[in-house]
Picture 1 (tube, rainbow, N blue to C red):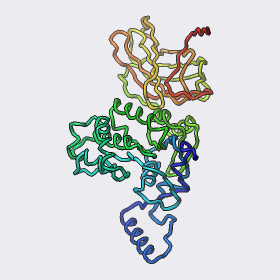
Picture 2: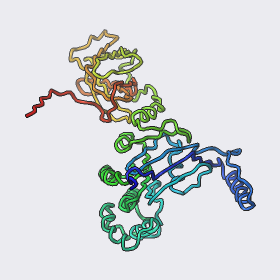
Picture 3: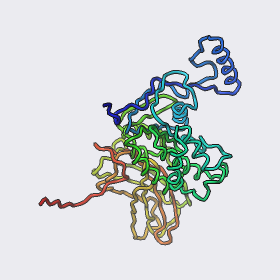
Amino acid sequence: MKDQKKEILVSVQNVSKKFSMDMKSSLKYGALDIIKSTLGIKINKDIRPNEFWAVKDISFELRRGECIGLIGHNGAGKSTLLKVLNGLYAPDKGQIVMKGKIGALIELGAGFNPILTGRENIFNNASILGFTKKEVEDKMASIIEFSEIEQFIDMPVQNYSSGMKVRLGFAIAAHLEPDILIIDEVLAVGDLGFVLKCFKKIDELLPNTALIFVSHSMPMVSRICNEIILMDHGQVEYYGNDIGKGVQLYYSKFANNGENIVFDNGMLELASKETDLVENTIHRNHDFTLTFKLKVKKALSKTPILYLEFKDKEQRPVAGLYVRNDNNISSTSELIVYSIKVKNPLFTLGKYTLDINLYDAIDSTIFLRINNIFEFIVSGNEEQWVPFELESENVITLN
């Protein structure tokens, strides 16, 4: 008997999709292609003037129980590829084979008839997948309960908020138990509670489903995907099961915006910044030193507090460090030097940026705030998806 768990449900071979850059070219080429097709003339599949490849030569296979993440910058071709996979666009080249029922949540409100109610749209979507009326009625209560919009289920979908559409769309896609589930960035619209609820449902579905997942949230991708495709300008830049490598390549595309002074009251000026790091690389558990020299432009009564804030690759603050000296400062001082040794850093792998904030120790008046003053890379042997690790002393007893 064939092992259903290993069954290939999605096979994409050298798929490409092109578009015209303007409406005039699109109409012209569309009309020519229709005429040629009617007359039995072979249609030119290469790009013509004012055309471009939105998706170029994409290939992958996906088995039941597997999840592949599609990542890349806006305009990389991810959503176009999903629409080709879902049958909304016909590929210009290549072949796609998809087996079983397909559930898709690829665009806000896609698949909904806006003038029909939520309940009627549930029936519509289910009938497309081949479910009988009785089967849908059996699942109806579960779908409505999951969506948490019971009081609005008999209201036309055109009156739904974006969050309500996402709730209903995911509830339908998940509860109809598709063989293949396609999810685009639309989950980002939902609130945190519902997103966590969605991921719990995905965990339940995944053993029997092939999942294609698109997101700009790398922690989300890393949580559920066992394969990853990094797209860039319609082409595959990386394809494999090393999720960490794909994510690092993705982050490496976003150059640091550079030092950015967001507040300056004219009291202090950054004269120089230094670090003993080689190529700005932090080695986990290895101390490193940061040195900041501040020029005093106006007299201060006390040495300002220096606050360092480390942010991860998603610009979330993950660690902070206060540097203070309560001694009075000489009225003739022209330079303040802060030398900070960061001991035993436990950051996990990835890219981090550092912001600094200098403020008055007495009334907390801000003197100077600079974002992205340093950018770091943390090296190590194992990829982790938590912001940092903790040290502990452990006792393990075997009886």
